[in-house]
Image 1 (cartoon, rainbow, N blue to C red):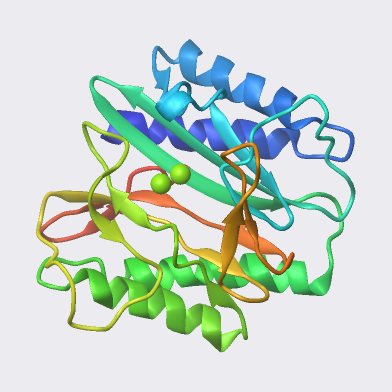
Image 2 (image 1 turned 90 degrees about the vertical axis):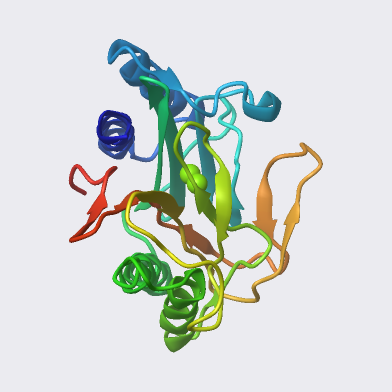
Length: 239
Ligand code: MG
Ligand code: MG
């Protein structure tokens, strides 16, 4: 899990270093695939339920699962979400970040910061003995504090030998409710935060999830190992 997490995190840094106006989302995807394969790992997303790329790359009101394309060109002021997974030694890592393209609006900056903060408020409660609802409640409360909403129809998840395992890790919840966390658990905590309403819809391509009201959305995800004495962000290799 540590190896998979490190490679996943480093693949995201590859993406970060390419973000600029004029770059296509396909170019970013190609670089991510080359990096993961160069490490002797396998892109977890490639072919997953038929997904055609190694990264999900989603722009502005696209929330998650955007399909990289040579026709999608990053533009000044966009916010771009890159979501990556890598598998090595039979275990997966999964991580996502939202990057600004050049100068972005004030609300976009606030959204990116709020989404990141929501993750850290949630993961602070990812300790043995706590419950899934503790994480979700902290994520939701943090986002709401900014006047934003969290996506309810897509959730975080357990992760390990499979990319998506139980339990679900929603970005909402009630403190003290839900499955109990225990040492040795590995979960992907991944706030998806919208400037407007929480409702989302899936585009006709069958993949791309967008906000129903067209508002901006941000995403922040790490694969997290809950240990007895500490909680480790396996995909955190720096921002
Ligand atoms: Mg992900
Ligand atoms: Mg995930």
